[in-house]
Length: 119
Image 1 (tube, rainbow, N blue to C red):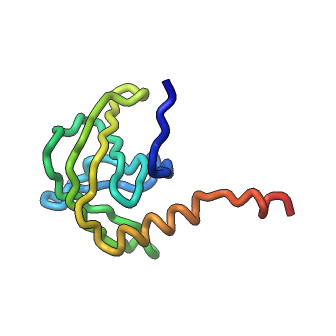
Image 2: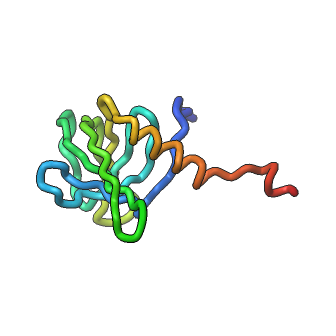
Protein backbone atom coordinates (compact mmCIF):
# COMPACT_ATOMS: atom_id res chain seq x y z
CA UNK A 1 0.00 0.00 0.00
CA UNK A 2 1.35 3.43 -0.95
CA UNK A 3 0.95 6.29 1.50
CA UNK A 4 1.78 9.83 0.55
CA UNK A 5 3.18 12.42 2.95
CA UNK A 6 1.12 15.60 3.13
CA UNK A 7 4.12 17.87 3.77
CA UNK A 8 7.35 17.51 1.83
CA UNK A 9 10.35 16.86 4.06
CA UNK A 10 14.01 17.48 3.32
CA UNK A 11 16.66 14.94 4.38
CA UNK A 12 19.49 16.22 6.62
CA UNK A 13 21.22 13.25 8.27
CA UNK A 14 24.34 14.02 10.32
CA UNK A 15 24.55 17.70 9.44
CA UNK A 16 22.78 19.61 12.19
CA UNK A 17 23.13 18.51 15.79
CA UNK A 18 20.21 18.72 18.24
CA UNK A 19 20.77 19.46 21.93
CA UNK A 20 18.74 19.11 25.11
CA UNK A 21 18.04 22.78 25.89
CA UNK A 22 18.05 22.20 29.66
CA UNK A 23 21.33 20.26 29.94
CA UNK A 24 23.00 21.51 26.72
CA UNK A 25 24.00 17.92 25.94
CA UNK A 26 23.73 16.58 22.37
CA UNK A 27 20.88 14.12 21.84
CA UNK A 28 21.06 13.50 18.10
CA UNK A 29 20.96 14.95 14.62
CA UNK A 30 18.20 16.34 12.42
CA UNK A 31 17.01 13.70 9.97
CA UNK A 32 14.42 15.89 8.24
CA UNK A 33 12.30 18.97 8.91
CA UNK A 34 8.97 20.52 8.04
CA UNK A 35 7.08 23.57 9.26
CA UNK A 36 5.33 21.51 11.93
CA UNK A 37 7.81 18.82 12.85
CA UNK A 38 11.20 17.19 12.65
CA UNK A 39 12.81 13.78 12.76
CA UNK A 40 15.66 13.16 15.15
CA UNK A 41 18.32 10.49 14.56
CA UNK A 42 19.82 9.40 17.87
CA UNK A 43 21.71 6.55 19.53
CA UNK A 44 18.91 6.02 22.06
CA UNK A 45 15.14 5.73 21.56
CA UNK A 46 13.06 8.72 22.70
CA UNK A 47 10.12 8.51 25.10
CA UNK A 48 6.80 8.86 23.27
CA UNK A 49 4.14 11.44 24.25
CA UNK A 50 6.71 13.50 26.14
CA UNK A 51 7.56 17.17 25.55
CA UNK A 52 11.24 17.85 24.92
CA UNK A 53 13.05 21.17 25.23
CA UNK A 54 15.32 21.15 22.17
CA UNK A 55 18.00 23.48 20.89
CA UNK A 56 19.31 23.55 17.32
CA UNK A 57 22.75 25.15 17.09
CA UNK A 58 23.10 26.47 13.56
CA UNK A 59 26.61 27.41 12.38
CA UNK A 60 26.66 31.02 11.17
CA UNK A 61 30.29 32.11 10.87
CA UNK A 62 33.77 31.10 12.01
CA UNK A 63 32.83 28.83 14.89
CA UNK A 64 29.80 30.88 15.96
CA UNK A 65 26.32 29.42 16.31
CA UNK A 66 22.75 30.69 16.32
CA UNK A 67 20.58 28.83 18.84
CA UNK A 68 17.00 27.97 17.90
CA UNK A 69 15.01 26.83 20.93
CA UNK A 70 12.04 24.53 20.36
CA UNK A 71 9.51 22.64 22.43
CA UNK A 72 8.43 19.46 20.67
CA UNK A 73 6.44 16.34 21.51
CA UNK A 74 7.81 12.96 20.48
CA UNK A 75 5.09 11.16 18.51
CA UNK A 76 6.98 7.98 17.63
CA UNK A 77 10.41 6.36 17.98
CA UNK A 78 11.72 3.27 16.18
CA UNK A 79 14.96 1.58 15.30
CA UNK A 80 16.74 2.99 12.26
CA UNK A 81 17.99 0.84 9.37
CA UNK A 82 21.50 1.67 10.62
CA UNK A 83 22.47 -0.45 13.63
CA UNK A 84 22.43 1.27 17.04
CA UNK A 85 20.46 4.28 15.79
CA UNK A 86 16.85 5.36 16.30
CA UNK A 87 14.54 7.65 14.34
CA UNK A 88 12.02 9.71 16.32
CA UNK A 89 9.28 11.97 15.00
CA UNK A 90 8.45 15.22 16.80
CA UNK A 91 5.62 17.72 16.50
CA UNK A 92 7.01 21.21 17.04
CA UNK A 93 4.96 23.59 19.20
CA UNK A 94 4.93 27.34 18.49
CA UNK A 95 8.15 27.38 16.49
CA UNK A 96 10.05 30.67 16.56
CA UNK A 97 10.53 32.68 13.38
CA UNK A 98 14.15 31.47 13.20
CA UNK A 99 12.93 27.89 12.73
CA UNK A 100 10.97 28.93 9.63
CA UNK A 101 14.02 30.79 8.35
CA UNK A 102 16.14 27.66 8.87
CA UNK A 103 13.67 25.57 6.88
CA UNK A 104 13.65 28.11 4.04
CA UNK A 105 17.46 28.23 3.98
CA UNK A 106 17.70 24.42 3.94
CA UNK A 107 15.12 24.13 1.16
CA UNK A 108 17.10 26.60 -0.97
CA UNK A 109 20.41 24.92 -0.21
CA UNK A 110 19.27 21.34 -0.85
CA UNK A 111 16.79 21.97 -3.68
CA UNK A 112 17.56 21.13 -7.25
CA UNK A 113 16.12 23.29 -10.02
CA UNK A 114 15.91 21.16 -13.20
CA UNK A 115 15.58 24.26 -15.38
CA UNK A 116 18.99 25.51 -14.19
CA UNK A 117 20.57 22.14 -14.98
CA UNK A 118 19.44 22.17 -18.61
CA UNK A 119 21.10 25.50 -19.39
